[in-house]
Each structure stands twice: as C-alpha cells, then as structure tokens.
Amino acid sequence: MMKKNWLRWAIVIPVLIIIIFITLGPRLLVGKPEVDAEAAVLMDMHTGELLMDVNGDTPMPSANMSKLMTELLVLEDIRTGKLGWNDEVRISRYASTVGGINLSLRYGERMTVSELFQSMVVYSANDAAVALAERSAGSEATFVKRMNEKAAQIGLSPDSRFSNASGAGQDELGPNHPEDIRGETKMTASDTAKLASYLIASHPEILKTSSRTQMELKDKGLYISNTNWMLPSLDGPYSYAGTDGLKAGYTSDAGYCFTGTAEQHGRRLIAVVLGAASKEERFKQTRKLFDYGFSLFTSFPVRLQNLVKLSLY
Image (cartoon, rainbow, N blue to C red; front, side, top):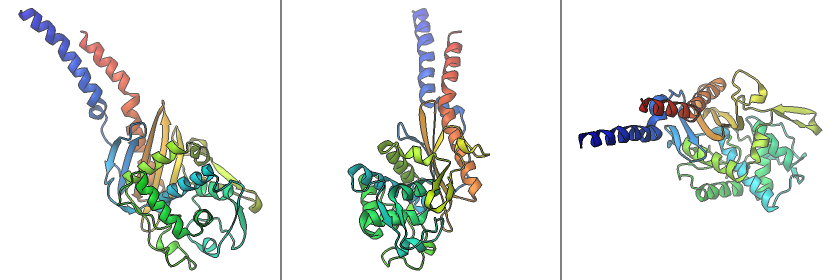
C-alpha cells in the first residue's frame, strides 16, 4: 500500500510542478524590467494580455499616438470607397499653419490621399493628418466626433478622449485652428495598446507603410525619413529585430512617446511608452519591454524540457 502511494505521488508531483511551471514559470524566472517613463504597457497581441503594466490606466497627453485612430478611420474610408488613394486634397489655411512636425504644406496646394497618409504614418506629419480629417469628414471637428465614437465602439475606456486628428498640443494648433478644436488629446497606455492591436488586426497592411524607412514626395523633391528608430532596416543603435511599426511622437505636455510593435517566432507584441525623458529613452525603454516579453516565450521550451528531464531522475 505504501509503495503504491509512493508511486502515485512520484507521478503526481512532477506533473503538478510542470503545470505550475507552464502557468507561472516564465514570469517567475524572468524578472520584469524597471521602466523609466510616466506610463508603459506591453501587450501580447495574440491573447490581448498585458504582460507589463505601469500606470497603464492613467490618462495623460499622448502626442502623436492619437494618429493611430486617424489612420484607422482613413483606412476604413478607403475600404468603403468613401476615399480613394488618388483623390486630391486641397490644403486648408488651418492645415498649412498647424505646428509641430509637418511637411510645410502651402495653403491651396493639392496632395493625394496616398501622399498625405504615407506622410502621416511614416513621418507623423500634423498638417497631413489635419488635411485628411477635413477631407474625410468635411471638418476636423466632425472627424474628432467620429474618432471618439469609434473609440467607444472598439472598447477604449472613457478616460481616453480625442481632441484633434493630429495629436498636436494646444500650443501647436497654429493661428488658424477652428474654435471648436482646442485642448490636447489624453489617452491611457492600455487604451493605446488596444487601439494599436485593433488597427493591425483590422488593417494589417498598415505595417507595410509603417515599416518603410523613408518616402519620397515627388512634387516637392523631398525625402522624409521614418521617425521610428527601432526599424531593423535603419540598422541603427536602436534597431530591434521584428519591429515593423508603429508611431513615435512628442509634445511639450506629453514628453516623448512611442507605440511599437514587433513580431518574433510567430508572436507579436505591442509596447506603449508614454512620457519618456528623451527621443532615445523611449526606444531604450521599449527595447526593455520587448526583451522581457519575447523572453517569456523563446526561453520557455528550453526550461520546460530541462524540468521534465530532471523529473525523470
């Protein structure tokens, strides 16, 4: 009888250890990094689980991260036929004077939807975002209403509210902004990750544009470079394998922000860093998040295999 009980426990205990390890092992063996930013989250896009959460539910200025919603709505307009890539957009006086990072578009000049969209995705141009919003909805205010309606539809929290299409701060809106466009968008890091996940899942083609190293504006004889320094194609000190998006930004109120996504070994992660201290730091902190997240998956099979081997001896 004692021998049977011993044999039963000899089988059960290793199985229990393996089950516990499958559930908790990677998180126990891989320490979470210290993230130097006002807020940060790391999402496993496959499951929607937040693997890291630092002030993820705190609403704060988010700079160009709000352009992710503008990109989503423009892509929806393209899909439904409301907009065409070759449609011409006349640049308004307001769009031509909005501040922050921009293309220095001139009042009255014309650009295609495609040129403006690529400029917004690759270079985060504020004037391009305003022009697209006005072309899509007739006015930026109407477009902003649609942004907030879409936010509720896809399950973002009421703590995230969009104030304009570009993510520009109040001091960047320029002298010609409409009276009904004021204030700065605030988002939570967790909502930003959720929005990025929805954008990629609904329109995976966005990654073809967001991963471009640069683009050419032929009529201007101008090349503009991607503001995402983590792209492997840039081959720089912040490049990270598998990175193909998504959005970098800055305002004086928001600090330096970044929403990055990378895929390795069939696993896609989304990292959001809000309120980093410098351009470089937002990418350094994102690297920490990616390293942690991918280590949970890439090192797990080896640890499990070693544990099973140990249980057999």
